[in-house]
Structure formats: C-alpha cells, structure tokens
Image (cartoon, rainbow, N blue to C red; front, side):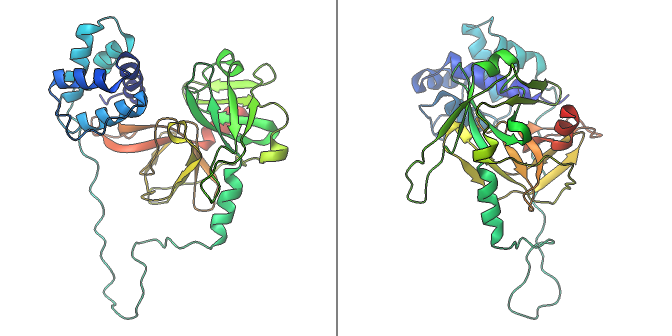
Length: 326
C-alpha cells in the first residue's frame, strides 16, 4: 500500500503547527536521530518542515522516527495519528533513472536536437505565457493559509478542494491578482478580490477541485483561461504558473517532463512548493491540461505494483474538472 499523499501533506502541516520554530523543530528531529547539519532550517514553519522531511526521507525509517518522538509529546494529535495509520509497509523506492541521451549515428552538421522531441518553441511562446499568467492569483484564506487559483469564464476561480473545501471557507477568503514583481524587481500593484460562494460554489473532494465566483467581474481585467479537454502524454513538457510558499507569482520552467498519465492524474517533474496547490498546469501550447494538487513520494494509479513510488508532483487532469462543472 502506497503512502497517501494527503497524509504526507497533513503530517507536514501538523508538525509545522506543533513545532513552528527552528529551535523546537531542531530539538525533535535530533531526538529522533536525524543529523541536522545538512538541513537548511527556515523561519517559515511550513518551509522548514518541508526541508526537514525532504532530508528525513533519505534515511529509511527516519520520518517514522520523528513521528514516534512527536507522538510521545502529542499522543492525540490527528496528523501524527493519521500518518501512523496510513504508513506504507513497503520500503520507499527511488524514482526511475533518467533516460540515456545518445545522439544519432549521423555525426554531420554542427547543431543537433539533443532529445527525442525538440524543445524549441517560437519566441511568442513567452508573450502568450505572460498573457495567461494574468489570470493566476494567490488565494488568501481567513485562517492565514495560502494557495493558488486561476480564472476561467464567468468570473469563476478554480483551485483545489483542499484549499477551499467548502463555501464557508471560501466566504472568508480572497484572491490577489497581479501579486508579482516587475522587471526591476519591485512589486506591482496587486488587486484583491473577495470570493462569492453564495453566488456560485462547487467542489469535488475526490478529484480535489473547487470553483467559486469572484467579486467585481475580474475577467474584464485579468482575463480567463479556457477549459477544454486536452490530450497529454508521458514525455510531454508542462509549465506551472504558481505562488509557491505564498510568494509572488513564479513559473517553473526547467526539468518539466511529464512522467506518467493515467487514472485521472498527470505526474511530472516540474517544481512546486507548498502554496502552489491550485495552480494551472500548461502544455507547450499553453493549454491548461491539469490542476496541480500535490507532490512527494507517490505511486501510479492502476500500477501492477502499488508499492512502487516515485518522487514527483501530480495534478488532476483538467477533463475531471470540466466534467464536474458541466
């Protein structure tokens, strides 16, 4: 049985709340036996625990050891109990090795395509990406949590169910557009909009998406991303425009290969961080192909070996969202 990705996310969030400072987090991981010399501790609790768990996973059983120590102090904590209940019995396996990049036998000419598929795109690719980025915003929840979302037609904001799980949470949230830096590095003027779940709210916990109306007609200012059924395959490339760690808008532009498609999800090597949940996943033609929602050591749905795990990020195929909104 593979580790449930939500259990990993819940564990990170739970530990960040129990041990929010560097001193407290360092104490508990040292008690568990983890060498802290290679951990770049961070004052942001979520980022801090992301780094700690990323280092802990390199040592077999270390995450379990940290949970064991924490349970001695907080035996009734739900995040710790959930991890213990859902922990996989099989050992974590490394992801697949990179493909061997061998050039063709023909050695003529001075320039070559290095991979099996050309990564060249027209220069207008950057311009289209910037235009689409306008529709991406940072979600601010009433409890201080942050995520990412994007506009589609009818002034609807799309994000994850675990970002906006219900109308009550959406009613206390807002979305911040244009939260990004200009070419000189200075922040642009952001546009804060309230959410209107009383006018429209729909969600799916199973497929981890939510849609909610945004106030004051944001499509007129910030545009909309088209939602159409798309085809995506392993080996394709995908970019993600996001607000990692609640920071200003960023894009992951490297190592962005699709590793797996199936079971309603797409798995890729494109970088994300906590706070990137709800970001649009784009193909090389800037079509929205998925809704990013999680990452870590995950299995492939329907795999003949469900214990085999890969270190990847994952999105919900946009077809699932379209079907739910229909």
